[in-house]
Image 1: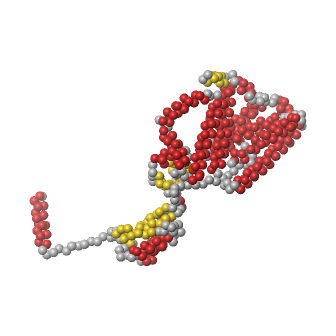
Image 2 (image 1 turned 45 degrees about the vertical axis):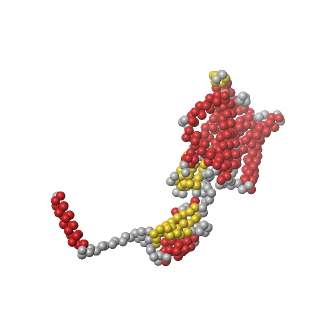
Image 3 (image 1 turned 120 degrees about the horizontal axis):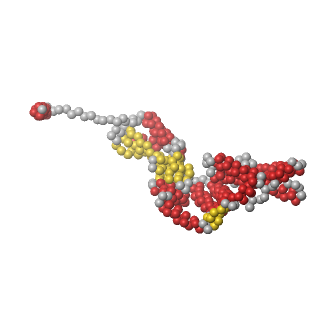
Amino acid sequence: MLPTPPALDSLLAALTKPAALIELGVLATVLAVTAVLVYVMRSVARSVRAEAGRTAPLASIWFGDYLVDGVLFPSLALALAYLARQVLFLQGWPLAVFKLAIPVLLSLALIRLSVRVLTVAFPHSLFMRVAERTISWLAWGALVLWLTGVLPAFMDGLDEISWKLGAKPVTLRTLIEGTLSAGFVLMLALWVSAALEARLLDGVQGGQLSLRKAAANALRAFLMFVGLLVALSAVGIDLTALGVLGGALGVGIGFGLQKLAANYVSGFVILAERSLRIGDLVQVADFEGRITDITTRYTVIRAGNGREAIVPNETLITTTVQNLSLGDSRLLLTTRVSVAYGTDVAALCERICTTVGSIGRVLPDPAPTAHFVAFGADGLDLKITFWIADPDQGQGNVLSEVNLAILALLDRDGIEIPYPQRVLRILRETPAAAPRLAAGSNEALTDTNASG
């Protein structure tokens, strides 16, 4: 049941009395003390996080971005204002300002709670500004209607509109109050899941990040499921009806949603077995890049040129994926060169290995190698291999640097890189073969004339 609103006429009359100035002073003191307490608590929280080595920004649900736009400021101000109101009431002081301040602070706390939780849970949503304004207008409108005494009469009228939901009678007022309660419960579930997810992922990198990401997703799904059940109970829906809904949902997943369900199951499998982790360099089909995010439905792979591929998790489970950094981040690169016949290949291979090994990104262990692999049509084919430890810094740049160093070495030593060439042999006619060739030409000419 809603509390009885103050009579508007008596409230306005009390606000014009000199005693209201004392209440305003007490309320101003309460707000000032609240601001100081929130500032101190925020500074202490930042110091604790810095000492613990946490690099993630401070959660803004409680403290907000500008100290007064979080949940803590209106909630603490509401508690202190209620305490001051009780003290003044026990002293027999006529109350006017606090009758108005308490509901205003309560509305502000509810607004900040809804907005901050939605912003943290959905940071990139374009509808957050619209949601914030909608929630604000609804809260302030309900406050005005309550102060004027219109809201209780309106709710009593809604209580007369009823129908049966199954075997249970439901009124329109119960439905509205249940919806508001359901929204509040879901908001708390989102708040708890966001706080626990930030706690799990704070300062974690590498393989542990994927595992904790899976735990955070499972925890959010569980809390949202529990919140949904509580919300449905608050609305007045019989939860026994969910058995039929669950059966229908199972049939839907088995037919129309099987791909979507497969992607979600595959996402949990990837996160659980850690075959792919955030930060790994992978190649899927012809796309190569680094994994930047793994969700329950898809995986985001970012290439070196800035392009991002959103790959369904089922694809990563059912196809071959080359993980270039699963067991070892080192990568083998290969280049080839041909030199002219007559080159001292053994001595040249040693000099090439020394030259390639002097390049900064080339690993000394395993050392670069140069092998004579084939007798080419135009020259002697050499194959040079070397290892790098940082493929995320690019492969084409280090390969180009190696090729330039080999080219400079060949130029210094005067070793030729042969052009494609062909040997043309001209066979001279012998005197004995000349009459036979002439006779054959005449016979061919006769045959041609006859056919013509």
